[in-house]
Image (cartoon, rainbow, N blue to C red):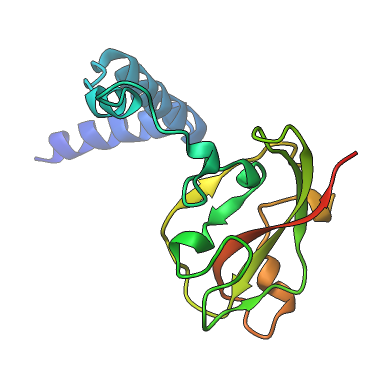
Length: 176
């Protein structure tokens, strides 16, 4: 058995001497990437989306005037859960929550009267997240260094409870 041990010891030391950790990681990486291209792409089903896009019975309902839908015209820069689906209204927080002390603003176009409106998006704070009617509209959003026009921030941070619940969209002015 002595020759057997010496043989494998010499082979192991030779491999360890001639290879590094980087080359081993490189080989494993190539193997992983190579198998990703070799594996077939699994099929997926888009039937549900196609049926949802084409309503039965003709014309689709206009959601631009439905304040519980993300397509509602006031929600053009809203990122969060709609208070209209969480026990509040379009401009008032649900009971048990308080309006955020800081806000972000957006200018949205009302397709029904052709005017642009300045919308104040206020988070409602103090209750657990609503998790209903989640919207993410980023029309005219600015990077995070322009705080007043950035919608990806928890605006409840200035309140006594910084727990986010939902967002309201109040009209504060008419655009020129």
